Length: 422
Ligand SMILES: Cc1cc2nc3c(=O)[nH]c(=O)nc-3n(C[C@H](O)[C@H](O)[C@H](O)COP(=O)(O)O)c2cc1C
Image 1: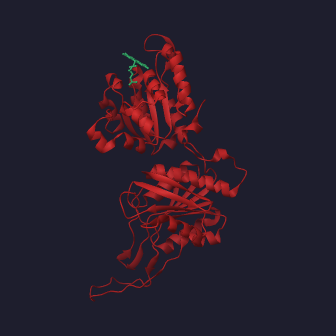
Image 2 (image 1 turned 60 degrees about the horizontal axis):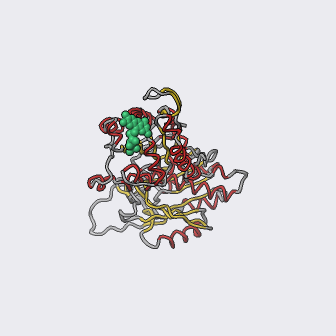
Image 3 (image 1 turned 180 degrees about the vertical axis):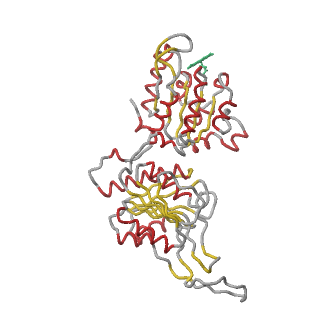
């Protein structure tokens, strides 16, 4: 279960508690299990531990100030909120919990908590009388009812010499608890096939036609499908990306090879997610020798490539097929047209050709999901996060379509309210 932290982006908030020194251990454990960690310290926290400690342990600069022109240019509170997959505040002081309940935004950590809609977990640490005070109890109750997760506190010896409930939960247990936030299992037991990257259509032995697809979106989708419990096969065009853990990968070059590889896997595939930017056309003839620079003009006749997605859908109608539409104009119109023409179950449309909306080669992307009965906008965010949200919607539509005995529990969501412990 701890492997679910792999490649997750965790924002660790450290507040002014005597337990702040234990937060270093939390950073170490998170990184051990593959999470990327950024730390925000409150002003009071810096009286207990230096930012240098967390910078060294996290490998990232530590964020401290809300009103910092340099930070705003690089990683301001909105960017930090958008960057993270989850926020863990450990230790969480009594004062922090009170401010969180009020929705204050007068320091960086508070502003980030307020600006985010991702899972937020707090690990309270305080004297046992502070913990059992009516005010703290009220704050915790309200925060839980809003979906804030509380990890601990534990009971035992306290730094002040008292014994009671209020110790910060052990870092190893905290990290296990956080890993559970990412556990979904929405696609457990299903075989998902993802295509990714560009294709290369040979002109002669040294030249080819291709496109700018980096494969990042497809690889992120494959990773998110593994995290959701699926068995995942990835058929990839030429890219320079590492294979996500737990994914079976086949490398291909041309559209024809991609079609052959996909077809050879299709027997037990439940969901096909075709993110690859497959070349629509290929040279009719591939020259056996390198074309020499002789004539002033060179004509290369192109013929249509197979349409992998519609071919698969025709042969395997039970397979839930998701296509991508990378467009430079009339996004929605093209997405709906593709949905009908290819007879598929969902189209994920995105703008390409500008940097504002992410797309090819970018680390961020935005998608408009279109299916026969509806649509959903997934705003600009990093591709890992987007892939998880995308997989969540695919799982929902898959189960709706199949109307099987599977319960709604299998449906993935990161709505804070759904995590309520109250
Ligand atoms: C030595 C010392 C230890 C403290 N330990 C805690 C603690 O464990 N938990 C807590 O809630 N507050 C503790 N406090 C009080 C907080 O530091 C104080 O409420 C502070 O304003 C919290 O700020 P912050 O929430 O912005 O980090 C301690 C104060 C001192 C001086």
